[in-house]
Amino acid sequence: GAVVSQHPSRVICKSGTSVKIECRSLDFQATTMFWYRQFPKQSLMLMATSNEGSKATYEQGVEKDKFLINHASLTLSTLTVTSAHPEDSSFYICSATLGLAGDEQFFGPGTRLTVL
Amino acid sequence: GNSVTQMEGPVTLSEEAFLTINCTYTATGYPSLFWYVQYPGEGLQLLLKATKADDKGSNKGFEATYRKETTSFHLEKGSVQVSDSAVYFCALSLYNFNKFYFGSGTKLNVKP
Image (cartoon, rainbow over all chains, first blue to last red; front, top):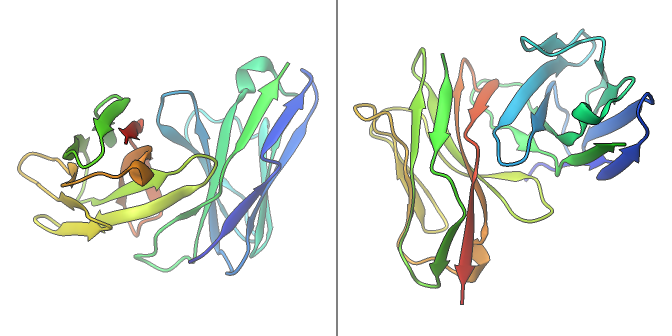
C-alpha cells in the first residue's frame, strides 16, 4: 500500500524558535496532503489542506501565520511551526491522497513536538 | 455540524473475547464511515469502510455496519487476539473523501 513518512518523529525545541516537519509520500504522487493535530486522548483535528503548487486552506481557528504549510512538490509537504510556544506541544500527523474522488487517506506516523 | 463520538477507553479484553467499540456520528450530509487502526509507533491504517446506509465493512475479522437510523457504525470482532492491541479511530468523511472528522480513539488492550 501507499506509504507516507514524516520527519522528524520527535522534536524538542525552545520557546520562540521555529520547527519544520516534513511529510513525504514515498511511492505515490499526492495531489492533496492534510495536516492534523492530536492532543492526548482527543480527536485528530484537521488543521489545513494543502494542494501541490497552491496555498493551503486552513480550518477555522488555525493561525496561518503560525503554522506555515508548503506543498512544493507532489511528494512533499512541510509544516513549519513558527515562534513555537509550550501550548504548541502536540502530536502532528499528516496524510495524503491521490486526489481522486473515493480515495482513502494514507497517514504518516506522526511527529511529537515538545516546546520547552 | 459534523462530529464523531466513540466510547472511551481503554478497553481491556482477554484473548478470544468478543469486541464491540461503539461509534456514533452527526453529519450535515450523507457521510462515508471509516474505522482506522493505529499500532504503536505507526501511522493510521484503514481497517474498513462503508459508503452508504446498510453497507457492512469487513476486514481481518472486524466488521461494522452503517446504520443510518441510529447514526452508528459500531466496530465488532468475534474473537480478539493479542495482536489486535492498538488504538481504533472511527471517522466520517464528506465531499469526495477529502475532509475527515475523527473520533477521539479507543485504545484496546488484549491480554493473553
